[in-house]
Picture 1 (tube, one colour):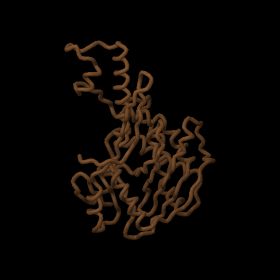
Picture 2: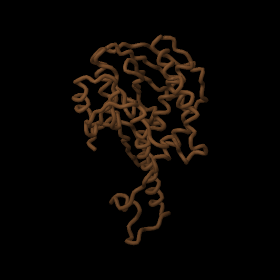
Picture 3: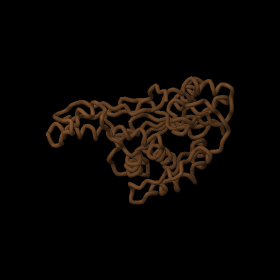
Picture 4: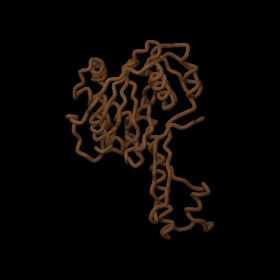
Length: 296
């Protein structure tokens, strides 16, 4: 396959093992079993290709649903992008808690008699979140996430445009912003388009009403429909994939238009936009994943 970096537009041929792994990336010492995620991956990875064949043949069964939902759950739990996205919410909670404690007089002042609130506002101090900590929380909820995704509505997108195959990326989840504003699990807040192969992708509409329910891997609420997107829709999906990529975009066929297309859409990425609203002596914290203009 080929890769192109959004950061410098350098493109090159590569193999997946060259660019799609981090040493000990799945190891998390906040968990009792630091390699807990491997229990899921050892089920998903060997059955991935067979599940793609099942999607193409329109004979979707429970194993196919579980494998694809498990793949999406793993990506939205462990990818470096996810660790970056989940850290601002925790940081906002820490800052808000500190401000509340400060207002209650439970924290000492600094040597220059400034309060913690003043120091935070002036940027003199801040909180740093170990990105492995939110990753641990996400891994702990992965079973529930598989169940929610597998019991949601899917669209199976078959790409029949020969010269515009689906891209993928180092974060192969393209989000479509929705109005689900009070969803605790930010990974399920938006609809997702997940490229699975150059010719096939799935759009998942997470049923967040299932949050907190007992996992059900018979997937009784799963529904789907098949779509063959037009050329303009394929372009729109690829645009989202590029904009949601952390840095690396991957593609199978080297067409002349790809470099210009990536260049036009490279100054975007997913960010966690957090707002803090005063509420009854404390704060209501609202966080949402959005695609924003970004120049890094």
